[in-house]
Image (cartoon, rainbow, N blue to C red; front, side, top):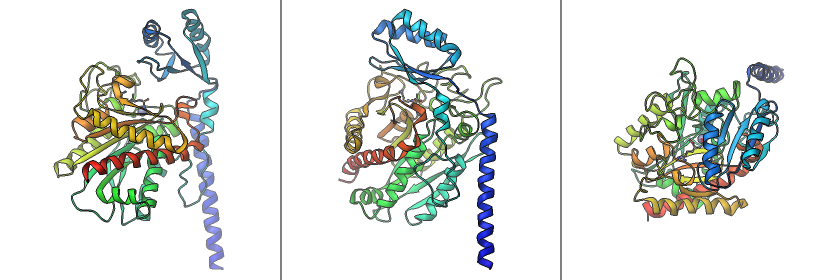
Length: 437
Ligand code: 0X9
Ligand code: ZN
């Protein structure tokens, strides 16, 4: 009888939760920015002149188009999202200039609608679905409780809107102290949902394989891993509640536009003119000062405190999407001479991309950041290398190459997780050879 009542109670609690989830999704749906009929268009400049012309067009149309991927370098296309009322105009301009283009996504809203699914009331975390910010924070708690001997949690910082940002420390029970340290962060850009999902996939794979897979056991005994699944707490939350394609933080540093690009807010080479903006409404706004964003100030202080207390960081990876790239310093300039470690950066990067390709054949391009993609100052990868002193500092751009872009369907979380896990294992194998020969 007692059991039956309890069952009934938990069933109705479960129903209540579903109703609440449905209600909040409904409210969020009413408030949310919609992208009905928006297209993403891939533009492929054929020569230097067209590329320069496109850069001017980008500036003059900045209120009408949303650049998903910029085209600074030879052979690199530009992806833009365009509202229905500007599509004909943009296509006409491109036709007149004879710049080839084609539509990649016909209706952005229909893809946004397929991104989320009510994951129900199960206690098991579903690694094959996207999760809300609160669910990810709960995952941190549950994951550390599930593997108490190798996982612990900590509070990294508090976001502008007052959210706690948590991280996990993952380390094997063997090995000798002090261990070299590793920092991997996901979700710095809010709309790049595959990043937190892949980072959590890697964490669970490492925990499952510890004591089973000899490479994983060796690297976990050798290194302390500090991992943040979702750094841009407020921005990520906002992509669920209001605008699926929000990129920046949600700080209010000016009277008119909200948010700073956290990946232009790092204190190394902050404020350069390249790839970032001093205008607060820009998607790449660098912020009023370096470290103006709580998440950047908080995470870099956390890291510098660890460094000062003797932790030697040797790896820094910032997970983004999309484009399938694995990039290393420098990010701030394509002209600055490459750091002395650049050859080693390339060797480890090739191990990453070869390891990744071996799983499903997915191709990643590797290279120095500014020379391979575009220059941008105040970025994480440069700070991780130059200030934190992590020799193997990278920015990864996960799947895909633009078919879905930021709206990668949830059914690609698993293959992305599996191949990226293989990639980081190969990369860690290189670090093991270097630091623990
Ligand atoms: O622009 C960025 O912050 C990154 N790309 S994203 O589409 N995820 O926003 C790239 C950062 C890498 N740094 C440079 N290419 N300089
Ligand atoms: Zn990004």
